Amino acid sequence: MRKRYVIVVVSVLTAMILTGCSGEKKGADDSSMTASPAAVSEESEGVSDTDGALIDYEKTGSLTLGKYQGIELKKKDLQDEDLTEEQMAAELAWDSVVSDSDAAEVQQSLIDEEYENTKMQYENMAEMFGTTLEDTMAQFGMDEEGLEEISRDQVVLRMIAKTIMVKENLTLSDEDYIKYLQGFMDESGVSTKEELEELYKNDYGTRPKDDMYIELVRDYVGSKAEIK
Image 1 (spheres, rainbow, N blue to C red):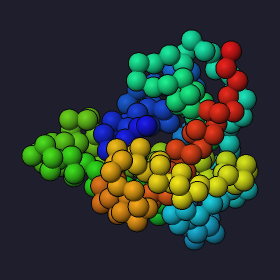
Image 2: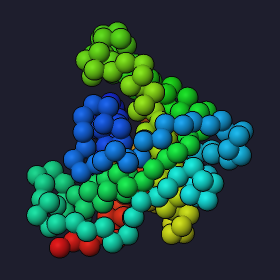
Image 3: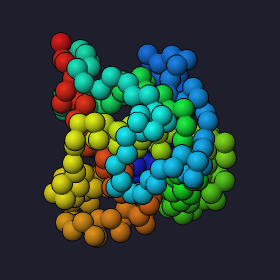
Image 4: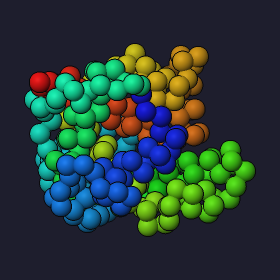
Protein backbone atom coordinates (compact mmCIF):
# COMPACT_ATOMS: atom_id res chain seq x y z
CA MET A 1 0.00 0.00 0.00
CA ARG A 2 1.30 3.46 -0.80
CA LYS A 3 2.90 5.44 2.01
CA ARG A 4 1.99 9.11 2.00
CA TYR A 5 5.26 10.02 3.62
CA VAL A 6 7.38 9.39 0.65
CA ILE A 7 5.37 12.41 0.69
CA VAL A 8 5.86 14.25 -2.04
CA VAL A 9 6.70 11.42 -4.23
CA VAL A 10 3.11 10.32 -3.66
CA SER A 11 1.89 13.90 -3.73
CA VAL A 12 3.75 14.74 -6.91
CA LEU A 13 2.44 11.59 -8.57
CA THR A 14 -1.04 12.63 -7.54
CA ALA A 15 -0.43 16.02 -9.07
CA MET A 16 0.73 14.36 -12.27
CA ILE A 17 -2.49 12.38 -12.42
CA LEU A 18 -4.73 15.32 -11.70
CA THR A 19 -3.04 18.40 -13.14
CA GLY A 20 -0.09 17.46 -15.27
CA CYS A 21 2.00 20.00 -13.35
CA SER A 22 4.97 17.63 -13.14
CA GLY A 23 4.25 15.58 -16.21
CA GLU A 24 1.46 14.28 -18.38
CA LYS A 25 -0.65 11.37 -17.26
CA LYS A 26 -0.94 8.69 -19.85
CA GLY A 27 -4.44 8.67 -21.25
CA ALA A 28 -5.55 11.94 -19.67
CA ASP A 29 -6.94 14.77 -21.76
CA ASP A 30 -7.73 18.45 -21.38
CA SER A 31 -11.00 17.64 -19.59
CA SER A 32 -9.19 16.20 -16.55
CA MET A 33 -10.39 16.84 -13.06
CA THR A 34 -8.59 20.09 -12.45
CA ALA A 35 -9.67 21.76 -15.67
CA SER A 36 -11.85 24.08 -13.57
CA PRO A 37 -9.66 25.64 -10.87
CA ALA A 38 -12.42 27.48 -9.01
CA ALA A 39 -12.36 27.43 -5.23
CA VAL A 40 -15.21 28.53 -3.02
CA SER A 41 -15.46 29.25 0.66
CA GLU A 42 -16.94 26.72 3.06
CA GLU A 43 -19.62 29.21 3.95
CA SER A 44 -20.73 29.84 0.37
CA GLU A 45 -20.84 26.12 -0.36
CA GLY A 46 -22.89 25.44 2.76
CA VAL A 47 -21.09 22.20 3.48
CA SER A 48 -19.29 21.33 6.69
CA ASP A 49 -16.59 18.84 5.78
CA THR A 50 -14.95 17.44 8.89
CA ASP A 51 -12.68 14.40 8.97
CA GLY A 52 -14.87 11.34 8.48
CA ALA A 53 -17.97 13.26 7.34
CA LEU A 54 -19.57 11.70 4.27
CA ILE A 55 -20.80 14.11 1.60
CA ASP A 56 -22.18 13.53 -1.89
CA TYR A 57 -20.35 16.27 -3.76
CA GLU A 58 -22.25 15.56 -6.95
CA LYS A 59 -25.42 16.49 -5.09
CA THR A 60 -23.85 19.80 -3.98
CA GLY A 61 -22.82 20.53 -7.57
CA SER A 62 -19.11 20.63 -6.76
CA LEU A 63 -18.11 17.42 -8.50
CA THR A 64 -18.85 15.51 -11.66
CA LEU A 65 -18.03 11.90 -10.90
CA GLY A 66 -16.54 9.66 -13.56
CA LYS A 67 -17.40 6.03 -14.16
CA TYR A 68 -16.34 3.95 -11.16
CA GLN A 69 -17.94 0.54 -11.72
CA GLY A 70 -17.14 -1.90 -14.49
CA ILE A 71 -13.95 -0.12 -15.54
CA GLU A 72 -12.27 -2.25 -18.18
CA LEU A 73 -8.71 -3.33 -17.42
CA LYS A 74 -6.35 -5.56 -19.37
CA LYS A 75 -4.91 -8.49 -17.46
CA LYS A 76 -1.49 -7.89 -18.98
CA ASP A 77 -1.42 -4.44 -17.37
CA LEU A 78 -1.88 -5.92 -13.90
CA GLN A 79 1.54 -7.54 -13.72
CA ASP A 80 3.89 -5.78 -11.31
CA GLU A 81 6.92 -6.86 -9.30
CA ASP A 82 5.80 -5.13 -6.13
CA LEU A 83 2.00 -5.25 -6.26
CA THR A 84 -0.46 -8.09 -6.53
CA GLU A 85 -2.90 -8.26 -9.42
CA GLU A 86 -5.64 -7.13 -7.06
CA GLN A 87 -3.61 -4.12 -5.92
CA MET A 88 -2.75 -3.17 -9.48
CA ALA A 89 -6.41 -3.39 -10.48
CA ALA A 90 -7.26 -1.04 -7.61
CA GLU A 91 -4.56 1.42 -8.64
CA LEU A 92 -5.49 1.48 -12.33
CA ALA A 93 -9.24 1.60 -11.72
CA TRP A 94 -8.84 4.44 -9.23
CA ASP A 95 -6.64 6.38 -11.66
CA SER A 96 -9.38 5.98 -14.26
CA VAL A 97 -12.04 7.35 -11.89
CA VAL A 98 -9.82 10.32 -11.03
CA SER A 99 -9.09 11.10 -14.67
CA ASP A 100 -12.78 10.95 -15.62
CA SER A 101 -13.98 13.14 -12.74
CA ASP A 102 -14.11 16.90 -12.63
CA ALA A 103 -14.17 19.17 -9.60
CA ALA A 104 -15.51 22.60 -10.47
CA GLU A 105 -15.54 23.91 -6.91
CA VAL A 106 -13.26 23.12 -3.98
CA GLN A 107 -13.57 24.73 -0.57
CA GLN A 108 -10.61 27.05 -0.07
CA SER A 109 -10.55 26.31 3.66
CA LEU A 110 -9.91 22.63 2.89
CA ILE A 111 -7.14 23.51 0.45
CA ASP A 112 -5.53 25.75 3.08
CA GLU A 113 -5.70 22.99 5.67
CA GLU A 114 -4.12 20.46 3.32
CA TYR A 115 -1.47 23.01 2.33
CA GLU A 116 -0.31 23.07 5.95
CA ASN A 117 -0.39 19.25 6.08
CA THR A 118 1.72 18.91 2.95
CA LYS A 119 4.13 21.61 4.07
CA MET A 120 4.54 19.72 7.34
CA GLN A 121 5.55 16.62 5.41
CA TYR A 122 8.25 18.59 3.59
CA GLU A 123 9.42 19.96 6.93
CA ASN A 124 9.66 16.42 8.29
CA MET A 125 11.68 15.42 5.26
CA ALA A 126 13.96 18.42 5.66
CA GLU A 127 14.58 17.53 9.30
CA MET A 128 15.32 13.93 8.36
CA PHE A 129 17.76 14.97 5.62
CA GLY A 130 19.30 17.79 7.66
CA THR A 131 18.43 20.40 5.04
CA THR A 132 16.24 23.47 4.90
CA LEU A 133 12.61 23.39 3.85
CA GLU A 134 13.44 25.46 0.77
CA ASP A 135 16.23 23.08 -0.29
CA THR A 136 14.04 20.02 0.23
CA MET A 137 11.23 21.49 -1.83
CA ALA A 138 13.70 22.46 -4.54
CA GLN A 139 14.97 18.87 -4.72
CA PHE A 140 11.48 17.85 -5.78
CA GLY A 141 11.10 20.79 -8.14
CA MET A 142 8.42 22.17 -5.86
CA ASP A 143 7.43 25.76 -5.14
CA GLU A 144 4.57 27.53 -3.39
CA GLU A 145 2.30 27.31 -6.42
CA GLY A 146 2.98 23.60 -6.82
CA LEU A 147 2.29 23.07 -3.13
CA GLU A 148 -1.10 24.74 -3.56
CA GLU A 149 -1.94 22.54 -6.55
CA ILE A 150 -0.96 19.35 -4.74
CA SER A 151 -3.03 20.39 -1.73
CA ARG A 152 -6.08 20.99 -3.92
CA ASP A 153 -5.58 17.62 -5.62
CA GLN A 154 -5.61 15.77 -2.30
CA VAL A 155 -8.85 17.49 -1.30
CA VAL A 156 -10.41 16.47 -4.62
CA LEU A 157 -9.38 12.84 -4.10
CA ARG A 158 -11.24 12.92 -0.79
CA MET A 159 -14.28 14.45 -2.49
CA ILE A 160 -14.36 11.63 -5.03
CA ALA A 161 -13.94 8.95 -2.37
CA LYS A 162 -16.64 10.40 -0.11
CA THR A 163 -19.09 10.76 -2.98
CA ILE A 164 -18.66 7.13 -4.01
CA MET A 165 -19.03 6.01 -0.40
CA VAL A 166 -22.36 7.82 -0.12
CA LYS A 167 -23.66 6.54 -3.46
CA GLU A 168 -22.68 2.94 -2.69
CA ASN A 169 -23.52 3.06 1.01
CA LEU A 170 -19.98 2.02 1.91
CA THR A 171 -18.76 2.10 5.50
CA LEU A 172 -15.29 1.91 7.02
CA SER A 173 -15.28 -0.45 9.98
CA ASP A 174 -12.85 0.11 12.84
CA GLU A 175 -11.12 -3.13 11.88
CA ASP A 176 -10.57 -2.00 8.29
CA TYR A 177 -9.65 1.51 9.42
CA ILE A 178 -6.87 0.09 11.59
CA LYS A 179 -5.74 -2.21 8.79
CA TYR A 180 -5.52 0.64 6.28
CA LEU A 181 -3.68 2.90 8.71
CA GLN A 182 -1.21 0.13 9.53
CA GLY A 183 -0.53 -0.56 5.87
CA PHE A 184 -0.40 3.11 4.92
CA MET A 185 2.21 3.95 7.55
CA ASP A 186 3.93 0.55 7.79
CA GLU A 187 3.07 0.45 11.49
CA SER A 188 2.10 -3.19 11.97
CA GLY A 189 3.35 -3.06 15.57
CA VAL A 190 0.74 -0.46 16.54
CA SER A 191 -2.73 -1.91 16.88
CA THR A 192 -5.00 0.67 18.50
CA LYS A 193 -6.98 3.19 16.49
CA GLU A 194 -6.09 6.03 18.83
CA GLU A 195 -2.33 5.43 18.63
CA LEU A 196 -2.42 5.08 14.87
CA GLU A 197 -4.43 8.28 14.45
CA GLU A 198 -1.99 10.17 16.67
CA LEU A 199 0.99 8.92 14.67
CA TYR A 200 -0.75 9.82 11.42
CA LYS A 201 -1.56 13.34 12.56
CA ASN A 202 1.99 13.88 13.78
CA ASP A 203 3.58 12.92 10.47
CA TYR A 204 1.02 13.10 7.66
CA GLY A 205 -1.95 15.33 8.32
CA THR A 206 -5.14 16.16 10.13
CA ARG A 207 -7.51 13.83 8.24
CA PRO A 208 -6.64 10.17 8.81
CA LYS A 209 -10.18 8.92 8.27
CA ASP A 210 -10.73 10.93 5.10
CA ASP A 211 -7.46 9.63 3.67
CA MET A 212 -8.28 6.03 4.56
CA TYR A 213 -11.60 6.51 2.74
CA ILE A 214 -9.46 6.94 -0.37
CA GLU A 215 -7.76 3.62 0.32
CA LEU A 216 -11.12 1.92 0.89
CA VAL A 217 -12.68 3.31 -2.29
CA ARG A 218 -9.57 2.51 -4.33
CA ASP A 219 -9.96 -1.12 -3.33
CA TYR A 220 -13.71 -0.98 -4.01
CA VAL A 221 -13.44 0.32 -7.56
CA GLY A 222 -10.68 -2.22 -8.21
CA SER A 223 -12.96 -5.01 -7.08
CA LYS A 224 -15.67 -3.81 -9.49
CA ALA A 225 -13.37 -3.59 -12.51
CA GLU A 226 -13.84 -5.87 -15.53
CA ILE A 227 -10.54 -7.60 -16.25
CA LYS A 228 -10.08 -8.92 -19.77
